[in-house]
Picture: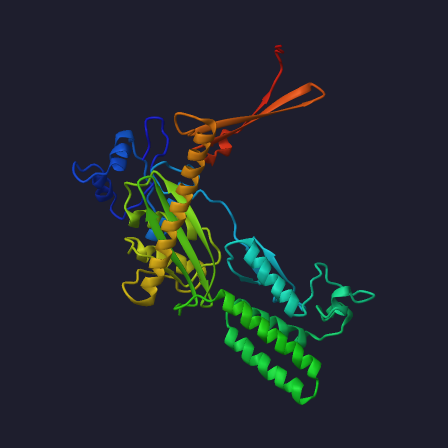
Length: 409
């Protein structure tokens, strides 16, 4: 849909285009948002494709390209950290990355923030003797990590591939959340060393088992029996919508993320959720087996089909009605409500405090602040930062070159 300036204001898809368009021009049951959109429509443009999958992909690409004002827009452009294991190498390295590549390596994540990924990586380097050097090659002598028992020095030929890969397999079990399997293997290994009276090595493995149990306990989420799912909660008030995602991997919650959308109060929750899921998951490489939410989506089968083809395995959208799965969706919804309330609370309290300190009659909804810089009185430059309703607006920032300075006494 385009306005009189030929600007795209809405992108949608339909099996029967005539029926879909007629919905927008009915006299009854139109929200304020739809009425506003219809009032701006000047003409339509449409593209015919061969399948619903193609229509779904095209819709997302056009929304991403034109960013129409009446579509749900995912503005967040952050990338999430993953832990990469180069399983194809003779002596694999393990490190954190934000770039997923189809290079044969194993990627574990996503982690909601770099802190949790770094914590796991630090634990692995502390408890497993894997190489930490970036440029692996034969050397004249072993590095310090070997002497403090944090590396097996494969660069010096002190360990064979089979023994080294045994550690890598255990690390991957840890990252997949298969704690019971790895602890069982380590217990067997510890007993073997104890029988050989190699008590120092047995004690080292015992300490590793205890450390794994501790890190596993920190990650547990009660009453979650799923292994690879995302749980999405949605909450909206009169002005803003908050969507919260919980990442569950290997029956453990590894993190969460939230997103805010303004000016969607007249849009149905299921429509907001459908728009979010298409934009969010169609760009992701690491897809869960299951996505759980409150609302059943009209495009459920089409979205499932596309995501399953993209992942190379079955991906399902679920709307649980009872049991522990429903409780977990309710927990995500509660967190989305709390997140939104905290965001609005922080802004309002900040503005109220500023109003009192500056003794203003009204809330300072828009604030412009300036900083002047110069070099010995020359090359005078001013920087301006703008805040609206308590939020920094980077797109309104400006830099001014000051050519004339009027001095007053």
